[in-house]
Length: 257
Image (tube, rainbow, N blue to C red; front, side):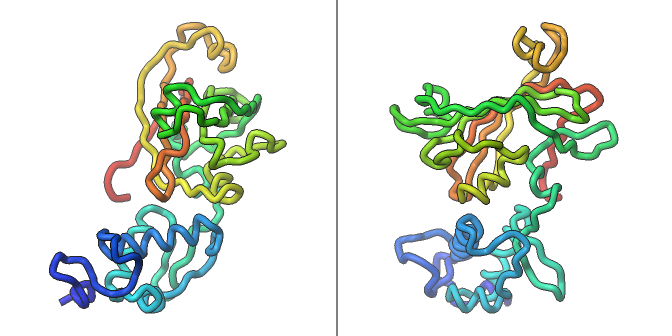
């Protein structure tokens, strides 16, 4: 019998003291969310070694198997890294991690790491699409960011995004926003992006986009309509990318990597 069987209630959820008695989620999910909160808030930082499975199990009052399941789910989501005999640590600040949600690859099947130019940020009252996408109230404010993404100096993506102003205070006034915004969200605003959902369509370049990307009006583009979700599963960013993919392609990995 595995460790996960110890201390379970009749409904398959583990007894013991992990969190509020009204929380009926499996204990591993509660432990997982508690670990995520420590990373989101900066208590545990990038590259930091975290406590061992037995230590986490003891702290949260769960079995070692439950602690292991919580950690393994975060390893699968690229939040944690682990190596046998070395321990478990928060994923480091590497180029690959900063761009792990960027799904455009070159003809050599290497992920492109784009630069940004023509960056503009402004605060505005959320429109109906922003409110519905981001679950905002009628009078909520958003920060809108527009920029052109480049690769080796060539513009290839016209990008527009919206985030709730309440979560990203003063971001519109920051003098220089970094290329990798998701990494910046976590470090500067304590918002940890855990998942994205992309809707893809083929569209034709309008006049404004054609000028930005140096293509002809009507040129074929890939439209990526994305919603990004934070560690609490709430939508926190709506982003639209219009991509001119010369010698490049969109690549999505399904299932386990």
